Image (cartoon, rainbow, N blue to C red; front, side):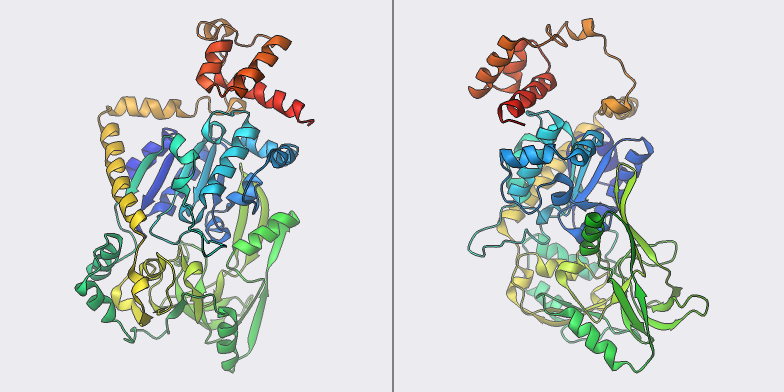
Length: 510
């Protein structure tokens, strides 16, 4: 599926899983949709499974946004605590669309926790995520959830209970916007297609200890979380030049600022010297760099001492401070300002996810997780940009379960595209216009006449009697479905959910 088709599906307010190979433009498309929502004054919450991924889109982690934190299980007490939080309730009231990026690293139980909280705060107990449009983005071939107990198998988000209830439309992007030669594309496709063979190994081993052309030495990617900061500091000390330091500036609530600091790759104090190897950690297309552009500091400008970086392609860029923000419904909750560089003699594979590198020295000899080799190799645009330091068999291995899932996702994406193409264009445009009307009553001017609604729901907007309340609790505890309760009481599902929430909160002493 191309980006234009996927964007149209998103605009129709379906729950969507946006996926595709590394470099297929998933994040770019997400940003397009986010901007579309903002232009329409539709409340959107931008979140991700990790802090680093969240900062790429001026968002926050799903753990922080939802209020679940690091808890494995959300209890009734937790729900009461979260609902008493004025900001959490206000945030939820203003939100119509929830985006979760890098979904491959989100545990199934975290997905269910977020759903539980959204249903509770939205007062829609029977609708997945309380009726929000949910857009999930990521690639399950990439890094999986981090498992605390190594003896237990991590469960992916698609194994959550709520995934099965969301009626998700699959948008599988099949265009390529990063890799620039056939050799590396074939290599990556062999890995995704569980077709690693002698030719595949011959291709990757052809780069074993082969130098990469260029004046700048490539960044080293490590599979293990060795002390890359220590390596970078050590290399910096070898340079006999004067050092300049840049302190991070920040504003906003202390909690949100700390969250932004942890997620952002920018160091609180950046120390540079002429000759330092650096990597850009933010996109700025106007200035000519992206997240992952590698270069070398060749000097500092006279006026404000900003570093001058020469990129691999020979372009010299005066690097001014970049800004990272956590936004929520067009409000900035926290902001940090820092030179968008970090030392780049070494970086971990985990931190490289989302980057596009011109070249890299990659050590996969100690690969220990599915997706590790795929993530590392897919960061680089060309095969000639890779110097392979080492590799083991695990590096090119994939999870069989994910391989089978991927085949199914491709079929479902084709089905989604075919269904949409059957609808004529004017009808599709009309559906987009109506999609978010009235998704958020606070933003809609549409008025419903009570007598029209009561044609279908005879008791709509009528006061609840004490007998009604007692009967509702009784029927709910007998596991009646939302549709059954709506039929019994002659009211809309939303009204049933809101009343149940109020009654259950009162009984728990809230």
